[in-house]
Image (cartoon, rainbow over all chains, first blue to last red; front, side, top):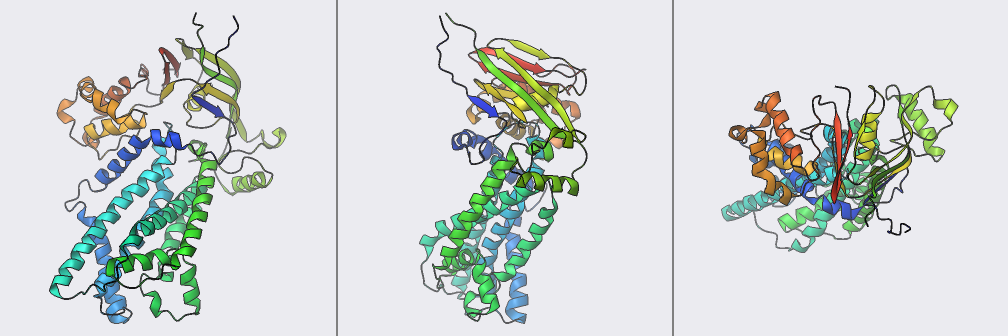
Length: 286
Length: 213
């Protein structure tokens, strides 16, 4: 009797596979690993610290205080009647999230090298877990911000400006996350073999902050000036302005997000393609 | 009737590695390959044999074999014969330069016990993490959790970060997780340099690559 069973194989490995194949079903099967890697990140960071997760709050808070002193009081930059610390904190929190996600995801392959060379899992699992564990810290910071703002409000030091932009929060978070994730995996893919770019990235992200409305509101920049053009080219300008508006109730121009959306989609697609292309032989070059 | 069917089929498998350190010469080669439409970054481009053979190393070349359901296969060879490379290809840690692998069922590889152990996490936390890394579902780990701890014989230290463990305790914990994997590769006997790939579909099929002890 001839062998008539239909050929079904669960796993097929070819020497060359199309770069666009992102196996979402496989990724879904690995959701437990993603959850556990997030847990590992969150548990491991603050082991042997006394303050633990409080550091999540102290970092942006101290940065905002420094900005408030340097730019707010000395440089007379800060605008309006919002307390300077609150004004800076509202932008420092999302900016730090953005910078941390880029820095961490771009290093994720090197950090997890011991894992990648010993066992198979979809490589994109590692940067996804890193991004989500960073997001947990971000959400915690937003909650603390609201608490601080409420306390200042009770003291009469801060008055809610009254504009309600809460509906933008999910979109702002999504844009910012995907932009940082896309940039991170792009860099991770490019630095798997040559690590030079890694040095450039951390530094560039730091510089990019000065071409964003973190330190001064967009309304203070003279329209049409070089700075204005640079700031409007920065895809993080829209999300930063948006988060500040959401958190302080100030005014916000949603059309700023159009440019951000295009850049985000572009960077994400390029990042995924490069990462996909490199991922199958990471273990050889890492 | 039930014909024993193939659960692993490897056809014309080859793996080429590049010798030497990563430097700008490789970057130049990489760019050339990239613009020639080769495989590009991250892997070697198919450049003509004579041009490269001096700096290339073929760990495997033209390997074809199949493993049937229920078979246990051992691969024996000297150091550098390509046993571990074969195992890495079968476990998808790296991709072949040429050829194709087809597999049925689920496979778990064990190149090293305790893969992904995090020194700051406790024994219990590492059991969950290690199990997930080896491809176990969370529910499977939970079901076998007590068994794994009992097997490891370190109940009293299970809530201690494993950086405080002795080498022996870490190995025991790693073995305990590996022994409860489904499909369960038997931890390689003796030397830890050995690797094992266990493949299971309905029956039990083992594929092992063992290094010289």
